Amino acid sequence: MSVTPVHDNASVEKAQQLSQSLYMTRRTTAKFMGVSEKFLATHLTDGPKRLRVGSKIVYRLSDVEHWMRQQEITR
Image 1 (cartoon, one colour):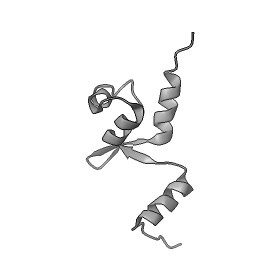
Image 2: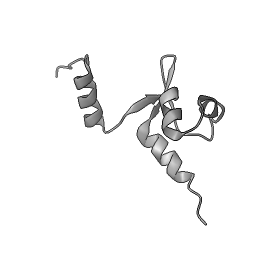
Image 3: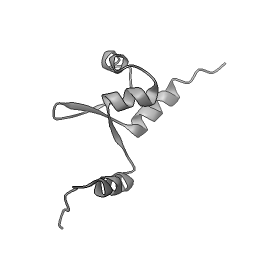
């Protein structure tokens, strides 16, 4: 089995389609959620799941959306 390295944007988009996931930085995640980056930094235990890749923290879009659905307020 050979592995093709991901080099360009088209390959990255194809990889995201295959994995059905998108990974976002803390800044992008904060903008998506409409909160500050500080909010994400201070809600490590009760916020959306995050992953550490080397020294970077990333958030899976599906995890962020799942967490946001759990925050729904019902009347």
